[in-house]
Length: 144
Image (cartoon, rainbow, N blue to C red; front, side):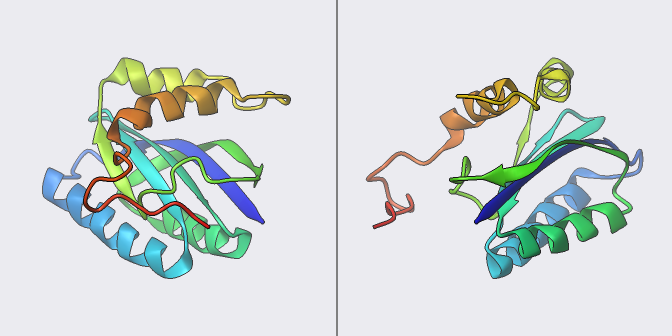
């Protein structure tokens, strides 16, 4: 069973690019250990983060997120069981983008039931160009 969690938050004003890269690196190391994958989208003022993995591991990551001093005003937008990973390629990656993109993700509909969730479709559309190409060096192998 897998679970997904997404939120937005305000970046700390004193957070440097170097500190942000260190956070992403440390998060990737921790996430690999607990089998969590995800992406952090940054617009210079806000974070939008999506993570997915086993429920217990996700709870551990969520505690780290809430305890972090690199941001404030954490607002969950998605917290639900999922059947498959949307971003299986990264323990954690970060993508810098504009405020309009992050606002679009924050304001997307994440509570739809049925065939697709509009917010998830928007997130995957943003991330898809960054996915590794199948057959390239370093690309993940398909699960058997």
